[in-house]
Image 1 (spheres, rainbow, N blue to C red):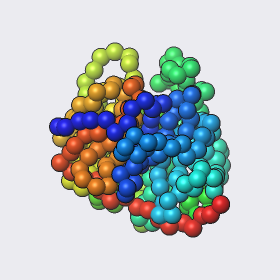
Image 2: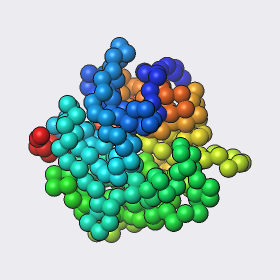
Image 3: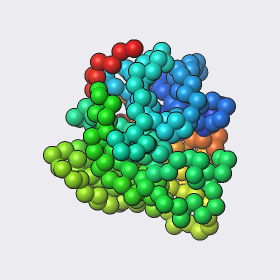
Amino acid sequence: MAQRFFATGLGAPEGPVCLPDGSMYVTEMSPATLQVTRLFPGGERRVIKRTGGRPNGLAVDGDGNLWIAEAGLRAVLCIDVEGRELMRITHDGEQPFRLPNDLCFGRDGHLYLTDSGMAAEEFLDGQNFARDYRKLPWDGRVYEIDPARGEVLRILDRGILFANGIAFGPDDALYANASFTGEVYRYDVFGVANPRREVFGNVLQPFEGDDFRGPDGMCWGDDGRLYCTVYGQRNVTVLDRDGSVAERLPLEGENPTNCAFALSGKALLVTEVERGRVEQLDTPAGGLPLYYPKLGLRA
């Protein structure tokens, strides 16, 4: 499988979003950056906004506005292409967000968000996990949000052990993963009052030791397979339609955080924080089309 780099020298990149002109957005989570950046194929890059918190997942709506899961600010932000803030959502109606992680739009125009379940200062010691972090009272959640009104409509699930990646599949179901267990969950969300958590698959390889490994961002290919980055495992693990492991795509960097398909051709763009790069993998599939609802938000 051919492999090359779309960009290097980034500050802990995450949240890749590919654009029709071949450029892409990423977030940069390192303390020196904390920003949303646009990367161009020729090497040019432009900072869209320095959020100052810890920007993580990204999604783009039909008006070109960017939606940011801002883990450090404990908020979901919407900004326009010039970086002007259009909306900020900070709570679910009952309590503040803890660690907004990743997000995606559904065919209903709603925004779906994972919250990992604990504020960063409660489980991090500097840039590392605190001692016994797995024993902390995690309450990872999956939310459904009305982005036009900036309101959380439903808590679809809770009690997840570090909720992380999220994406809609070809069956119109919502998929989200749990970084501590390696499991990918499936939810029927349309026309269902109380969606039930179903285990779809698991992306972890057998390993020994205490180093953290777990699923992170993920996306679907038009081949009906789920492509999931696995932090600490040095690969993108591909799950087949039945949830079984179809293959593992090796990476140069140890810690991939997210992935997105290019909008033309067949290439998977993978953000990786150990070396601060976007790795590009040629794949036999393109991406499953995403949803881009027009919301009409203006500065």
